[in-house]
Image 1 (tube, rainbow, N blue to C red):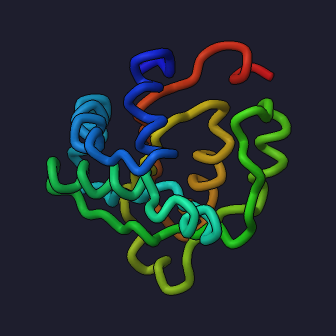
Image 2 (cartoon, helix red, strand yellow):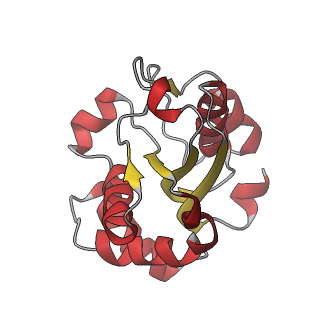
Image 3 (cartoon, helix red, strand yellow):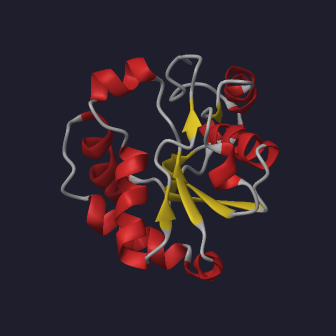
Length: 165
């Protein structure tokens, strides 16, 4: 979906207000969008949150989406495959170049998880894609750990000025 009014009303409460009731609906959208890459027994991996942000939010919305998608499709889910050992500031107002700089080295494969990733087709799951910097950081980490292929899916894609900055 384009990240406009309706998707915002579905995603922002999930992300910031402990409103998880839309997870199943949003996972259905993901299943439809990812149908062409779901056939190769993929491993679903959510974008990680830094532990401080996870503590504040109490859950990772991308992990909830990945688990729901896994239940719908039968795909394996590895919710802790990636970690964000370095906290990054909120990226909402940052442009493309700033996001890429902030994300450089901010995401890695969790120790002990490379074996579960090696040789697998991996799909990284997120709620919103703006510039792609976070998903790119996840992709680089997974490929370095030996993933055979990495695809990315997000519920919504931000289009417009912020994406192009």
